[in-house]
Image (tube, rainbow, N blue to C red; front, side, top):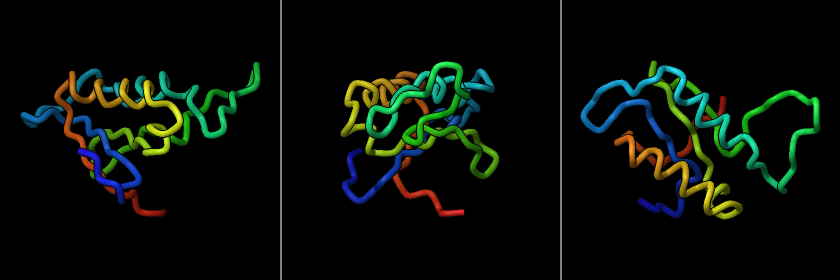
Length: 103
């Protein structure tokens, strides 16, 4: 699955058999768990706003919930990367490599 030129991995909320993954807030939950992993090891200040990590962001693409995982997470926090990839594998979610279009 490693593709050196791909900057991101897209974990789709669709199983390999084509079913929509549940619960409906799975992407937000996964990204919430990963929110502590940030570039430079920076952490949110106490009492600050909760924010997703730029390395693990939930979104919707073409009507499908997706978590975009940046490959920098793998280099900075290998165990966190393994956790996210194993989540996708264990739940038989579709995973694609690529680069998100800039908006």
